[in-house]
View 1 (spheres, rainbow, N blue to C red):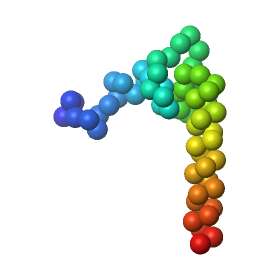
View 2 (cartoon, helix red, strand yellow):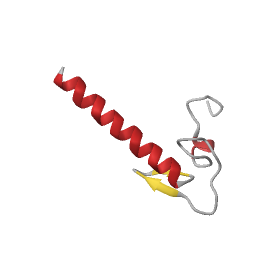
View 3 (cartoon, helix red, strand yellow):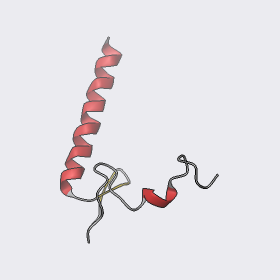
Length: 61
C-alpha cells in the first residue's frame, strides 16, 4: 500500500508543482502550491485564468 502510485506524499513536497524542478533557497507559493520560481507562479496564474475563461464559456453555451 505504501508503494502505490496514489500515495506520493514522499515526492509531493520535494519538487515544483508546475515544472517538476527542484527548489532553490526561496520557495514561492500561490494558492498553497509550492513553486520554484516566479516564472512558474506566472504559469500557474495563466493556467488558472484560462480555466476560468473556459468554465465561463462552458456555462454560457
